[in-house]
Image (cartoon, rainbow, N blue to C red):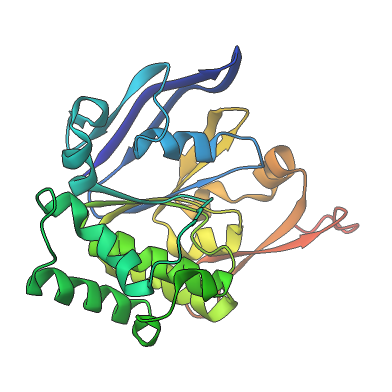
Length: 261
């Protein structure tokens, strides 16, 4: 399924957080939102997974406005991994992942054998099946993040919305999770702070600043020294990854005295 964000505007307490934002996410693509803190990335994603109602504009999933769908129908299409997660009860890992099946079940319906196999497969995919009987609150931050991604996968969505999914993860698991998202075949909209991870994982990048889109395009077209200086206030050299060919950034606190791009 494709995702279209059309004229999205969000105003909270007289403050405009996002203004006339337009983003296109083709079916099966991984599209990244990048930008400095406060640029509107998380606000935009919250509108997509129905945590925040926009003041104006539409979020379309396969042509349907998500805010005109029922909560159950929306959850069957879109699964989200928000940046902030709060757990007050110490469910087991298996119970947390099983929550992803609720949009596909009737009220008070017990998990079926098929549900349990889907959850087990999700746990295997993120490498935490051995934690199934552990209490969620006993896990490290990185382990919790992988369990929550498993819950999103167990939801069997057509669209994944991920807000900083590599938070708390070591470098190995950062790479594995983003590779898993790419290989899942679902449409993905992801906000990332790490620009090198964004360059390697995303087909298209949208650069946000002050609640609007500055530019969009392939990582190679978007991640230029000029844009990084203007939007992020940093000096960078853009190199080519020796294996993937993706652009990789090396940052410095001052411009190269010899003017090397």
